[in-house]
Length: 339
Image 1 (cartoon, one colour):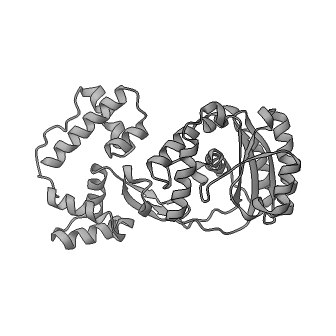
Image 2 (cartoon, rainbow, N blue to C red):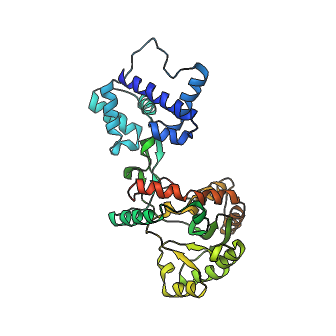
Image 3 (cartoon, rainbow, N blue to C red):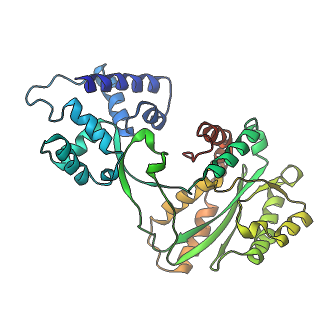
C-alpha cells in the first residue's frame, strides 16, 4: 500500500533527523507526524534496527487509499471538531461503516493530533504588512542588541479559568494555519498583572484589580519600571518595549517617558507572539493550577511567588529567541508564528 510506503519513508526521515540532533517537536513538524509517532519510530529503530511495519497476518486494512484521502479531506472542514462527526461524514462518502475508534486510529497513523485551537489575535493584511516590515528592519539584530531591550506586558489571571476552548483534528505541521486558531475573548473574577523582563531576569511586577489606564500605568512606570532599570543597569538605560494599548500612547505617558529619558521600541500592532515575555504567562498559569486557588488574595500571593521564582536563565533564553521569532515571522510573510 502506497500509504504504508510513505509512512516508512517518513519514519526514516524522522530517525535521520534525530541522529543529527534535531528536537522531537521540529522533527514532527518537518515530517508531518505527531510527536508520539516520531518517538515510536525512533524507539523502533533503536530496538530493531529498522523502521518498517512487520508483515501482519489476518484482516486487510479497513480503509483503502481512497478512503484515507477522503478522511484527510474531511479534516479541513467543520467535521474535524469531532471524531464522531468525521466518522459520520466518512461513512456517507465511502459507504463504509466504521467506528469512532477506527477513525481515531487512522488519524493517528496519518499524523493528525486532537488539539485545542490556538488563540491568536486576528491579523488583517495591514497588520501582516506592518509586522513584516518591522521584522525586516530587525532581521540583522544580534542577540547582544536584544539583550539591551526590556520586554513588558500585561496579562490577566482568573480564579476560574474560562473553559471556552475548541478542540479539532489537525495535522501536526498545521499548528499555525488560520483554521487552527481561535479568537481570544475575556471573562470572570480576575487579577491584572504587569511585568517586565530583561536578559538578566524578571524585574518588578504590579498586580491590580481595576482596568489599566494612563494614571495607573504612570504609577507602574515610576514605581516598578524605574527600579527595574536601576537594578539591571542596562546600557543607556536600555530600550523599553510595550504594545500599542491606548493608555501606552497617551499624551501624559509619552511626556513621562521623555522626562525620564526612557527610549521606546516601536512595536507592530497585534504582535504578542513577537514579545518574548508572552511565554512566561503559560508557565505561571501552569504552576497556579497545581494548587486550588479560592480567593483573589490567594491569587495575588501566588502570582508574586511564581513571578519571583522564574529563573534568570529562562528570561535570557526567551530574549535570545528574538532572532528566531523574527525569521519565523518573515517566513510567514507577517502572519502569526508559533512562539
